[in-house]
Image (cartoon, rainbow, N blue to C red; front, side):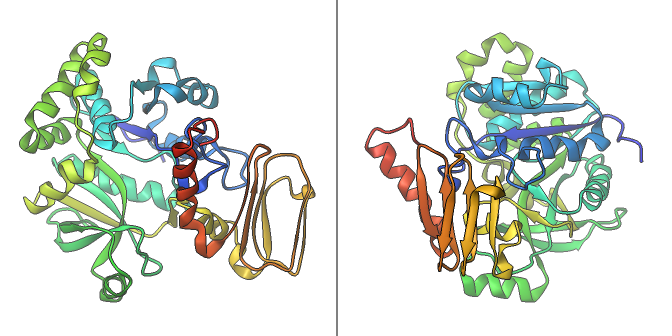
Length: 359
């Protein structure tokens, strides 16, 4: 199918992925790594997935620290397609900056924001969903993609589905965005059929996004437009921007005001938030010991779980179930899948000890 006319992809490439330490670090975050065994990093996979929709109409927003690495991985894009934010200010600033630049460049554009570190199982189904969302967004809706939950996850936010949207088959109004629930509440959400996972994917006209932001954060929207009008002021104005996620700044209040639509989707999605989810994505749930990296370096006996072989050293695992071993050469992590969320505490301790070189 042809690309979507005047549709732009915005790819926020930020975050340190501390639950995937020591593979993912502040100096080399998870979006720069191949976590699927495909030979492509998550960032490259994201751009590959979007290219049939947008051709070369892509804006990647990343941190200044990662600018060179991102440009190396996306060598086919012109330098101006990669925008560096001077410091992390959360998703609203990053996506809002791209929106402000696109508003001036192509006032009739529609943009879709898709994080650089997500894994999508069915790329064709993903693109079909985006095509529906793009049509809805042309009627000035803020549109999100609602992922069909496969289990009562407590690590994701949820979207409460409302009424069908008149004139747009396959889209519904959003009644509310719901924060990460308890296990009992998540089970109720999934069994009701009225909720979808919130993957943070949004499709919207840049003007609409900035006008909505201006409704609740007028100075924020004005500063982003000032930067777009005079990019030379980026360093001056950037530190004054609030640290807030797009969900909190715009999506939640806009949903309360009846301005948000959702396109429910089933295309297989994971944000690979920790080593447990990484193990699942690599099919470690069948009782095997799976390897990310050089499989020839790893030997397992009566063991299951995940080994990340990234140092060139041999790894032998004997008699351990649901183990996680990550060997990067300078750091060796050994834990279990059930304790995968606790990896972030090791990173915090390193920083307390002044070992930012390892964090």
